[in-house]
Length: 161
Image 1: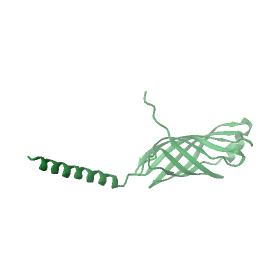
Image 2: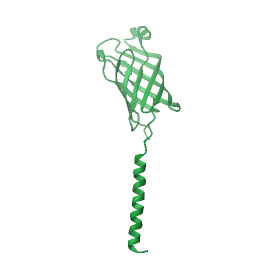
Image 3: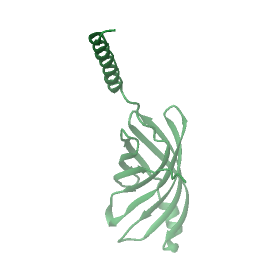
Image 4: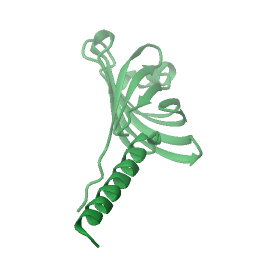
């Protein structure tokens, strides 16, 4: 085979590989799943109150999920100073939008303890309307309960040991 034919063949192969690579880049990327372990925190609300916690989301089928989380409602300038809760939830995903609807399972602890009964009566479940980013490592949106505030979820990374 002559050198000219070899160079021509190499050029044709290079173009074919490049065209295939561009075609792969043009394919739409699948929206990441929210399944996994997450930490979340709201921006401060009235009285310096913040909701934070850890949530585990498990896929149940299609774009439906079940979840559980432990949350702490903490306030700087009003009582109660902290309310620790266990909550269950369901989540639905449509595209990059995730809606989490929760149910209060148990109030674990209240600071001060004498506000436990009042908190059991008045605490409302915590709901979220969030958007997962294209990398699948963060979700941003709104926390909604009696009030609302921006919230950020960050995926917890598994430790390799």
